[in-house]
Structures are given as C-alpha cells and as structure tokens.
Image (cartoon, rainbow, N blue to C red; front, side):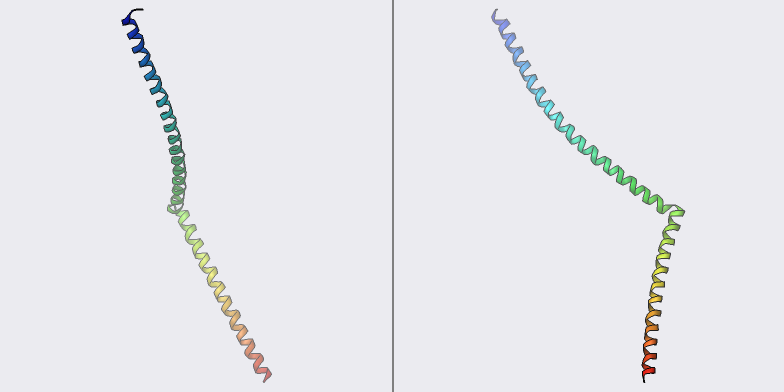
Amino acid sequence: MEAPAWILVIFLSVALFIFLVLGIVLIIALIGVTKEAKKIMLQGQNIAETAGDIAENVRDFTTVGGLVRYFVDNYMDKQSARKKRNSAKKISSKEGKSSKESEDKDE
C-alpha cells in the first residue's frame, strides 16, 4: 500500500475509536439520566396521589352534605361532652347530699 492509503486508514481508525469512546460515555450518561427520571416520575406519582387525597377532602368540605355532617358531628360531640359534665355534677352533688344526711342521722 502506498503512503496516502496508510494515512487514510490511520485517520479513519482514529475517528472510529473516538466515536466508540464517545458512544460508550453517552450510553453511561443516558443510563444515569434514566435512573434520575425514574426517581422524578415516582415522586410525581406520590405528589399526584397526595393532591388527589387533598382534592377529596376539599370536595367533602365544600359539598353541603359534607358541611352538614361536619357540623352535626361537632354538635353531637359537644352535646355528649355537656351531658357527661352534667351527669358528673349530679352524681357529685347527690354524694354530697347523702353524706350530709348520714351525718345528720348520726347526730
């Protein structure tokens, strides 16, 4: 082979080697980017699920039935707490009266 042919073969071999190395580096970089994209996708799904839950809660409180149920539940809780307090007061006052009556009988 003549010198110009050898020069052309060497030039093409070097060019192929450079492209091969760049291809390997690019594939490694794409694998890393793919892993990061997967993490971002999973995080986006979690955010979407959370947003869906928040939307359901807001919808429950903005509908008339949800508001009525909320206020009725709070009202019932307050009423039951008030009844418990009143019954506790009655019991303690009855115990106080019965102890006074027993003291009066003892005298």
